[in-house]
Amino acid sequence: MRTGTPLLADDRCTGVQPCGRWSDAQVCSWAAGAVAAFIVYGSLLPFDLGRPDGLRPAILLSRISPLWPLGSLIDVLVNVAIGVPLGFFLAGALRRGRRRVGPAATTLIVGCVAVVLGAMVEVLQVLSPTRQSEWSDVLGQAVGAGVGLTAWFQAGPWIVGSMRGLANERREPAFVARLLHLFLAVYVFIQLTPLLPTDLAATYHERSSYVPLAFHFEPTFPFLRHLAANALMNIPIGALALLGWVKRGTRRGAGPALLLGLSIMTATEVAQALSWSRYASIADLCAGALGVAAGIAIAEACSGPLVIHRRDRVRQVHPELLVVAGVWMLLLFVHGWHPFDFHVTREFVAERYFVVQLVPFKSFYPGYATAPLIGLHEVLARCLVGVPLGLLLQTAWIGDRGRRAAFVAIIAIATVVFVVIEIGKVFLPIAHEFPDVTDVILGLTGAAMGAGAGAVIVRRPLPMHTGQLEPLTAAARRPS
Image (cartoon, rainbow, N blue to C red):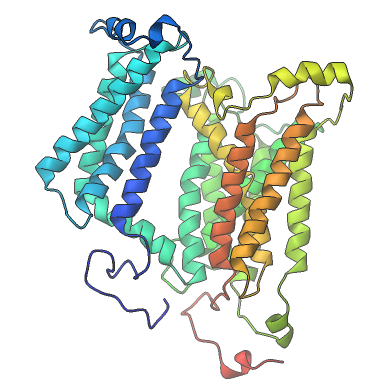
């Protein structure tokens, strides 16, 4: 932690929040606004509010009926889920501000906001011929907001403090370990989605006629891409096995870390084998084991003792990391354009132009409306492809000056990469992926997250050993 920063006892400068940073109330207010905007945007997709008679207030009011049908259980659960962060962050904004609102008033305000917001979007859905207004959506959001409100009263300050501790962490190994803990939740969700809620005993009985982990290998591009993705997904798991769940300033040995990483990877593969909707194979296990071993090797190499050389004081860029970033860009183009059967003709382009999706997330409706977990899986997966790009480009810049300019340059490079990929899809056959601005937005989001994490990682790491952390010796600090 940096020294010399004064810490005051007011609401904006506390022990977990240095002066000059955003207060908890500001963070929660912006988060609650973002959740509310997401609810409105998602509820009004695909924005076909075009009924001429519905634009008249009298006609609109006549369509508001207490006899709106009840939605399906999935719709109710989705609205409960999106109501939880709304209630949580709104309660945080009210309870952590300078003029703190009492518990009773907070409960009343959160409930009213959830009900009014839910009713407003349902009324606007009357204007859409493709959306159906349902009072159960309003009830689901209100229940979810109540759950979020309860969660804030029980553990809200602790959760916000933990996130602020992650943002203010200055010891690189500890910061990386916290990020890897967050990645573990994403990893498990992506690996097991869509895991159907079936009876495991019945599933095992139905699948007892074959070996779920039989070896299967196909020398085709989709299969090889699947194995490569599996290996890449397990690299952070290997790093987590080395750096996670240990005393601060220490790390696990390579052998125990390999055993722990393989256990986490094998557990997810076995869970896939017990699912109706996902399959596992020996090839997946081999690819995952390779990724775990690579993650341990990378984490072990990056957390070793540091010797500062004279050339490091002048050099601003790690060229080897730029090469790796270039390789990742090449892989993104291969993933987006394979099998490279471009059709550059006026007739073909004119036909493909009408399938370009320029409205963000419009392609997710209505396909993922009935399968929200798969939709969330797609969002996370498309964000993850941009994380290595931002992380590699940011960590390649080791200079102390120009970090903000480097971040802007990284976002510009990522924008060009993802936009060019989507433009290239215009010239690919109809069976290929549709060009979609959503992929650009999600890729840029991942690149920004990777660059933000890399901005902390690029600071000189402290030496780490399997035992107690020791300071650098004078000889190690002396330039060569």
